[in-house]
Image (cartoon, rainbow, N blue to C red; front, side, top):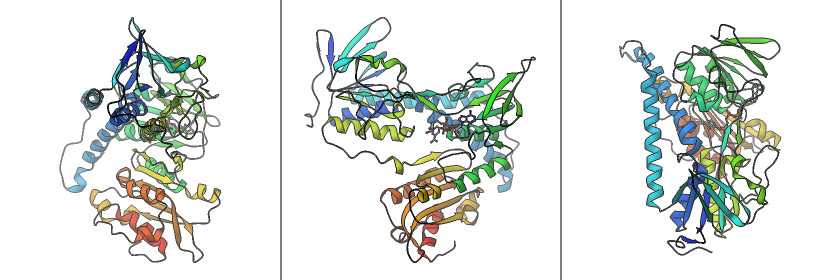
Length: 481
Ligand code: NAI
């Protein structure tokens, strides 16, 4: 039942404060749930032990992309002479970079705080735990508060995973948490894990002059991305001096007795000497502090809270969202889950999210963006497929900006005449593709056909023409491609 606008007033009886909805965790999943609930008119309380914004704002998306933008500026200035612009070789003032990153974070956190105030979300500072009957205890500095609500949403996020032999030591071994605030860049770095975080850090550090080695256990970097697109990134990394080892699990590292560097061993019997090891082998859910023992919420063997398609846990009236559950660990997925949980709590029975069509954006250079099936996964799912893959080297705008490494690959159902039917996936790698994914995302998720999309006009000269041309060439006719 939809509550009256304004929700119930906050009442405190017997020292228990009553809300319509309580959210534990103030990252993208939690703050989205609280803001969305308050926007509907619910009386929302949000419990957060640190600053609002979670991993995304403090040690994830925002600082990582800010440092990648610094790398972009550095790279652009390094190539200024290609445009006839004369400048001295760029130099990096890391302190200024770090200050700029922090200013952006601070502004976004302050904006979030204002939004919370504006929507009258009550923010409780402290560690939230959940007991039976949706009783939430907030342990702050020196005081404890007790809250309850008909709906409680768990959104306590995730932490970087480490691996045995690579414990964070503040000297040689770091995760993303530490790297994003590092005082100075090393000369040589090993990045363990060639996933989204690993590739973004490798790219950023290489652009800024670090000698980078990526060590990945699987047989390709960027698993989940179409192999052809991942190959473009691997080739581009190689051209920029980044060494990538695949099928190479790491074994350990041995600091040199001089204390100046460490030697990482991996693969058969390979080693590399580096000044820093960045461990980016995934993130683990963080249910540790919630103390769920008095509830029927189920935590699986890997630490994820088990939920159904609408993010409901096994405890009535309790939902879990974001990195705490086993769905793509992305801020935009977290936003969607936060809103879904609130909608479900109103009894509106929203449609479960379709994770298969999730948009993915990875901000290394060249950028990667995709939605839907890879060629391999489409075939595995039983589709007869036809693909088209066009390169940015032929695109006018890409030539103008001087950034032509990359492809747009469209994977479609194959019709009897050999042309394309429904678009099953689009995988892009190249300049600004994270900003170009939008129309590909809609095409995949709207289950558009090649003919539907090919009929639309793409503005010229833009990089997004390449998507239009890739789709057009699957109709059996083509223009430039
Ligand atoms: P990931 O799961 O994407 O990649 C980790 C990689 O480490 C995998 O390729 C895995 O095979 C490899 N690995 C694991 N153990 C290893 C070992 N012992 N030796 C060598 N390689 C090993 O995790 P990542 O990159 O840490 O990112 C964590 C999460 O954060 C991801 O799930 C992603 O959703 C999210 N994220 C997304 C970003 C984006 O979309 N732009 C950016 C940063 C993070």
